[in-house]
Image (tube, rainbow, N blue to C red; front, side, top):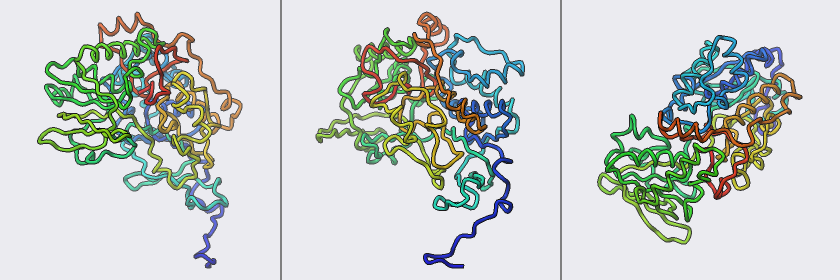
Length: 465
């Protein structure tokens, strides 16, 4: 039968659909800290689930920065439901006051948790698209009763009653270009540009030792890399930022609520003052040109003024952005600025909030018009760099409660953190002598309202990465 604009769609009767939503599992995308936390809460509530991880291990993205030590101790890095399930299985929690590296986070927490879930965690399973079975984004009648259709990169498909997307943003870093567009020539220089947190003192040492390295970015990922580079002798370092000064990157120093983070800024300031690190301000990356085996990185500020830096290697620590491509056939209500939900955007806007001032939020703020689809964790924040690991755990708890129909629990969202912060200065100092400077990455930082001595995240960039 044809309609005035083409063939009329045939509505599927519920009995003819391939599986009813209530009989299907919840699909969790991503086996990082937040995805596995969601799985733990689903397990506690007796809801069937499958975790799809694109990498070859749980915490595959965390493994990329496994050499980096987070700001917060173990006691704030383990989800409550995950802890209960692990302890019931005989797991012994790590030293609650130890600041773990990414590798320790995997070995001592994520890997045992994934093992507990057995074959419900599928690695090497990259999601390429999500839709509704028999429905594109336009069709409405009967939509909410249709299962979700999840297509994997290998062409296989599975159905779900709901989808929790905890895939993160680590694989979609921001570009070097200062206006949000790739710098001219950026694609052609990809072999000499590394993204945030290379293992400068470990596996990547030969790539940087003795080379002139340009680090672009003003967040903690940039600071971590700069401090590691400073330990390499005969390695010239240039640090380029858009701001007119680096006060935001230096943070609160000794007044920072997270002493491990404060130490990061204090040491960075000392290197910049001594000249070990050459700081270039007002740098708006516009173009990259090959200059023999080096690269000439050209800045053009809004007034048209140009300056340049010629380097052997570039580290782009310019942050991350979400990729919602896989959900292109779902009905998403995204904030046009941040790429989070519209309801969440004003709560996390980095122009108004730092990490510690983001209020608790849950399923209601994360909901989309597509009933049953939620993005959680750092992906839920879009381009806002104010994400906290503890906030992600609370998101997962609230969303799972909503999927279980327990809206009283879903709406009861809160964070219970000490008023004075989550790190001990004496701990940070003692641990640095044993294992190196505590540093941080997006998602590895926990905090409360932060009494920073200088400007915070509202000036751009982020306090969490």
